[in-house]
Length: 319
Image (cartoon, rainbow, N blue to C red; front, side, top):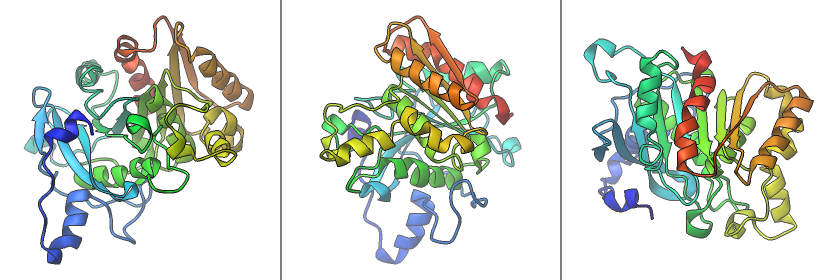
């Protein structure tokens, strides 16, 4: 359990007569037949009441339904643009950027160590990016110390990929004034969150129109603590290959030409050659993308410095 989760009280037990209404209004998961993220427009509700407001009032803490994870609720942090609550902006809609943490980590990492709120504000004030809603979920899974790589486990017990691409996106679109389409959604992550960001956009281009990765791993190895997610070999090897962007890029290349793809890596990072391999693969396939190498290591100094680079590229078409 993350520190954020320990601070949050459990939801009160609600009368069963109101269960269906609460599921739609509080968790934001659309009932069957109301559309899929990236499809028809979803109804917009009054924003849910946050359980806490932190980071000088800019970040709101929620717990949302997490049926894909087999959990009643999961913590999520949301940073709304300045002026979002002003009556004069009541009809305005915003793009959304989903920021994914690494491992071990939690939903408080990007607004904390990553200083994401200050970066978003400075870039939007300078006109480098549009004002956006930033959503920062807890990506814990059933691996060692909550490790997940944001993947669905081989046995379906923990479906973190589905939680992000379905539950979270639906909740966001129903709870806030978003543009509910892939053109106005980006997903950006660091380390394992970077691997996840590219996986999510490569596999769900109808949901995410842009992705960014900092220090990601794009050929997944037999990593520590992931047995519960990958399962035993030889099946585990197939799961790893199916979630390694470099290995399956050729199969999905035709549908990536309209996805904005950005990734970077530090020149002193152990994942540098892995990143270069993905760059070469995408070049060979003719898939448009931006790859950059900067000085630096695998750590927060690098990530909070270069978040601005992924935001500028990924959000350029969302003004």
